[in-house]
Image (cartoon, one colour):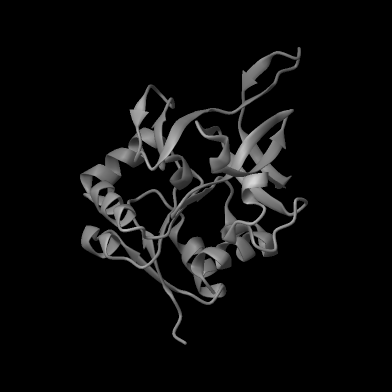
Length: 213
């Protein structure tokens, strides 16, 4: 059986080498491209990303990749967003103003809020390893097959996605007493706020589940 082809979207803001190497590690064939036609016709798609939401959407739109992703989604193509890539799947973000996203998942990307020195809520950057808490909606989900609620994965982000439908949140992590969406999913559209390519065996297992190894 030939290795599945995984199209990795190159729009100028992704850690493409790490993701590509991880895809190869789990037995799939990475195809890194900025070509909208290749993305629109892809078998499976990974949308990586690091940086600011508005800048990322500007790059996607400028390259015609937003339309390509929408066309792929309309065909039911499996799509996995990673970190900023997950946030781009949402309806909008409040980062540096209000910016419309791809709209594949109803909801809003908002600042991560932690506890300040005096106990008050303050904006915070969420960095480090956290244990996944698999939600009821994620227990039997294919992306989280063999995932345990104490599996630890690695995060670096200051904003997080909030779905309007609780069933679309497949797993969370606890940060300063708040539940942050770690894995989201709506039909063929999936997102992980953490970096599976940097999350050891647990992250690679989840990535392998998406790649259909």
